[in-house]
Length: 410
Ligand SMILES: Cc1cc2nc3c(=O)[nH]c(=O)nc-3n(C[C@H](O)[C@H](O)[C@H](O)COP(=O)(O)O)c2cc1C
Image (cartoon, rainbow, N blue to C red; front, side, top):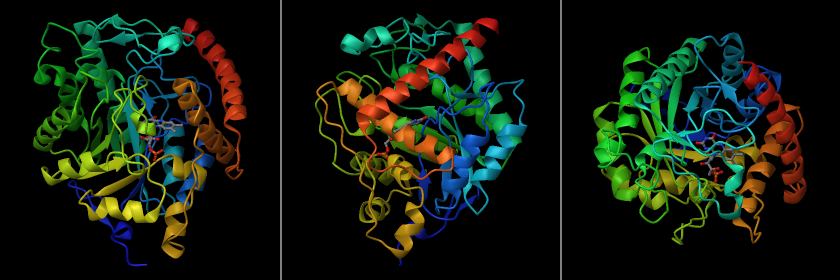
């Protein structure tokens, strides 16, 4: 099959990706004790490695174990042993795929039950309606804490490179800390970190510059950015274009475009401001427009499950196709597409009235597939969303208890 999507792509730093299909970051919540990658996560990537994906981007890895996006998460800090991370890279790269680590700080998107440090540019809590109480109340981050965060991103990135990762991706999307700085809704600071877009983007640019300077040559640097927050008054498409143009000057290797946050889960196809996204390849229009105006390679992720759509993304001038859930339900999709181009994955639609719970159920049913593969089992295509939600909730409660106990000790 003569599709351009299966041809190699050379990144600005010279790295050659064997094809243009990337597994987007999906938080696995499968850490072994000590917030480390263990046997199960290696088994999962082992399974994925056989499937023909060209680039693996890990689920988000925390820069600070005191601020986690969820229980069972992985953290890479100054004193973290590197051996488990080396095994993780080895599992993913048995064939010729590349493996990047996504690195993140949750900011205010921290579950209250987890506890820990809940920081945000301003002390504005998440508004999730009747579910708001599930999240910690943030305090406004201080200048000293901002500097510590920047340093932590550098530490995690350089240690990832030391462990053998071929690149790192800075998570500046989905309403986490950097994205909170970018949005005027969550960043109401009056100092040099708030106000104008230049100020709101200062944290992102300080992190990207510091990481770029610290990474060895040949290790790729990427940023995941929202094409918009899809909230009235939030970070919008013009802001995203401006940021990408500035990132071009920093000579990074890739920008992945997604969208949304916990408050407006556009990355799953739903928005809080009522705007309608495409039914497939949710952010393609934005990505195409941005790709036309930059020389930086662009990747877009969201709603891609079929080869014709994936190929359309490439045909419209976007260099890399990001796929998340479809690879959780079928880890061999890229390989299958080469011989059976009609292969498609049906991601269950969860049309519950409570959009927040529906979105959590979607995460749960997807993670269930990751956990099954971690145990050497195939994905379960007819899994029940309700059962997955309950099972995930119980699992999370157990892991949260373990985290709180360990956190209180450290
Ligand atoms: C279980 C799950 C975990 C996720 N974890 C992350 C993450 O750690 N970092 C991130 O940038 N996006 C994360 N995402 C969002 C995906 O990267 C992607 O943007 C989203 O699922 C839409 O793409 P898809 O339609 O191909 O799944 C996650 C999505 C799911 C379903």
